Image (cartoon, rainbow, N blue to C red; front, side, top):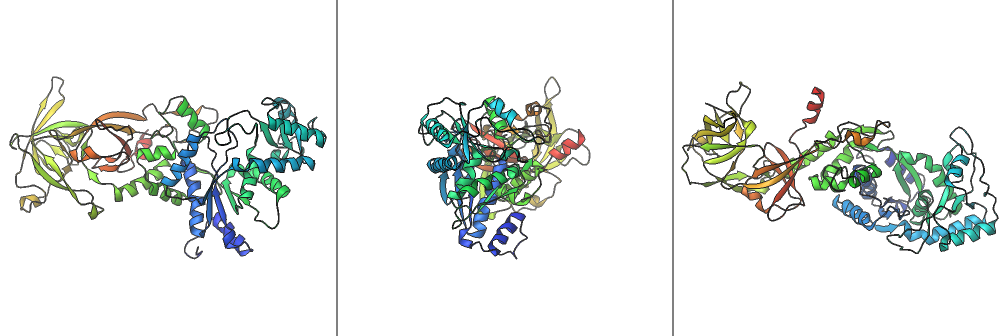
Length: 561
């Protein structure tokens, strides 16, 4: 990578410094190490873009390693979803690895620890261990089992592996320093008994390594040069290095852990524990509910891989945590869809419009461009008749001079069609408008080449022919949380901020070209926003999710409240 092409972030500066200090370019190796205990979210997307982006920039290998050390919470479903998300974002891993691949090596190293007096079996209750560990300002005290003999520790550890003891009976701890200022160094747990079926190793193991023990050693086994993680792992770095010290061979690459700040997103939670609660307690329909911050949810909502990658690039890598406004993510989505999404017409809040001087029973096909951004998308034909739906808000009986849509006595152009003039309305017994009657100028059709077709009017509105329209279920999404930072108030349950109006389902009327739209297809509903076909669609019913509006209106709404 040319350092002259762009300013380097601090992660890249670390790599460049290591290269200058003698690390061979061909020894660079990165990894993305998710735990398969949930779906990936927008925070993971940034980490994915960082690690795989470094692999691209430095032409280095990037492993996808599943840190699968807790079978009680892990499932193959999560493994499959993670792989799908990474591939959808456009990245490819060099090797697919699992911490469970190394269970035997980790066990063997642990036996060596015991023989060297660096680990022991503790049989205290979890409550007693918590008391004995001390506090950040008070040193801990030794476990009464800390000085068990090597022979007894080896025997107990072997029997733990064979499944002779129930969960919680014993643990294995590293013997470091119970008075250490870093509480993570006070004889941390390396193994616990867990009689759970593992999604890969089945029932082969009854003991499982703790994350801190397995993670760094997995990096070492894979010869990862740089292990990048979020700031909450900064206190763990000392333990990461201590464990490496015990097994490191100077002829090999020693992994270097460095931390970057988690980029929190407004009106969002990204804790997998909290996301799991939302799913299990049915506040959302699934992990890929379009309101979720998961990559699967964003994909289903209609976000594009490029938009998410551009978002990750825009927010960059920092050393200090901060809250990113979700409107920035939506801006990136909007910018990308504006270039790629075909334009179509749909009416979501309809009122009937009758063109009184257009012949009954007649219909014609009008030519409409598919995109103003990409001429290669070409044109389509849209049917036109004397009875149309328009948006209710596009008409007012009486309006001020700033209203440039349809009123009585004024003219507007129908998108891709004719100029019409409002003449009268029909109302129901409650005074609600049920029909708008208008006349059209036969010579004013867009693109007809006549002088009348060039006539300028102040407004253009979209429409669909009632006779030809197809109906669809439209799901309108709002922020899942009403609070800007639902994680910010630790005294309040984050679920108290769930927006009760985060989903509204309505019926929309669409031009017939959308009848063949398929799951995942994205469109701009002209003048309304960007929408995506949902996987719930069938041959009998189309379902669309609103992806994002044409502009950011949320900030304006918030400022008025």
